[in-house]
Image 1 (cartoon, rainbow, N blue to C red):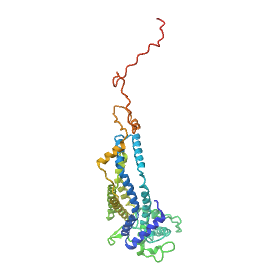
Image 2 (tube, rainbow, N blue to C red):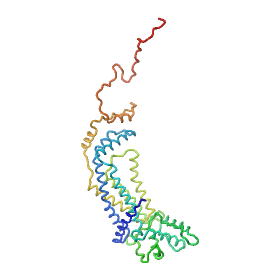
Image 3 (cartoon, rainbow, N blue to C red):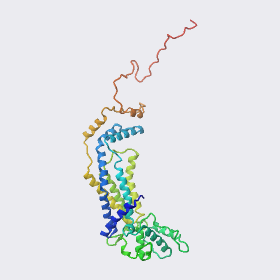
Length: 400
């Protein structure tokens, strides 16, 4: 995952501020997600303006596509795409103009996610090295039978702790022990600290003397009735199974509504169109599968993001609406784009003429009027009679 440390630090301070205002991690994440959307709103405006510009070229682009309608061979499609790109260039539209804001947002989102799933680092302000030392201490205490991890971590994390515990030397050295939470978040570490108390983790390179149990983030909601630090599991069918279900529903609805509020280019044909439709279902399914490997509070944050992303696109559409065109405007654009262009002839199945040859003629000037009618006396569609051989050059026959 791409993460820029100084950006993560900056968003970590925002998250910490939200948690101080609302000392509940799930609710703090709600305000955090809202603030992030507001901060990134200018990038959304730039993307929207780029899409509005593309939408304004729709009639001319459609005229080009209509010119090649019904022909799907590679050469024709390449020629059509080239004409569309030429149109964009003439109109000073960069189809990649909206990609840079999207890439910037994507990189920032990774940093935001890193801040959201590491409350020990960004809410409790415990240095990264100290968190790593706490992770190793967890393995050591588990090896000595002094730590209870039941219901505190996911099954995969529990297995990692057990594997790391086997690497502790007979003399108790933890030199070969690595953090079982590598590439993971610190939410499960918080659960272990809550379950076993912070006193076991005091000392140099871990928790300070002033750190108390009450300083740990609170992941519960509804007065402690539901603990969002737990990870949903099919093996334990309880209320947590609502989180994957809600993740699927909100992701699916967000994709559908966002597509409705966003300009859609001319319809894509063939395999590309099928792939686009599959994405409507595969992306929500992938998000749902991920919820079974992370604490529920992380999935709740994804739900917040989906809701605010949809609302943002709705607001952008109101601020910068897409142009609409009448049928007459489409026809006028088609006449303009086809002015001086010879229209391609229809291809008869029995003619045997290659569609590629027609593509090469597209855009050529109209015929000059030169007579190309068949010679008089020839039957249309018949092989002409052979010409009579010239007798003037015939050598005299010796027998004559």
